[in-house]
Length: 173
Image (cartoon, rainbow, N blue to C red; front, side, top):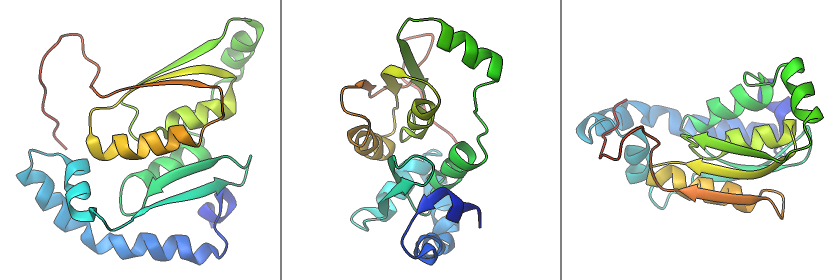
């Protein structure tokens, strides 16, 4: 299976068992999110408060650890980034970045739980990460993923959405 090649779980069935436990809750979360103005993350946070649905896994490819929440889009994002490699850096861009001796600063606008930064760290020598994320449920896991990152890398997490104007915004799903 795809996830088996991606992460170390001990018994790989444990990963899928946890994920399946949360699948029946998705319609409930969608209904809660509609009542909350489309905030899926907030709906999951309200529903899962205290449920301990965030788990730490070790990537098989390089041993780095990541934290994801079961029953959320985190599982899909993990697969999309680390298995499908949907954001892999094209060879020409990689060569150009490696030739340039300057430090690389990654700015992640909509950092979610930080998996994008963790992915690009495996691709390039990232010196610093600036992560914008407005949703509290995501910020909790983003901070846990930052704590698992390489020592010495500078992180700045900004509890806000990125925009061209200073204004309040609402999220819809």
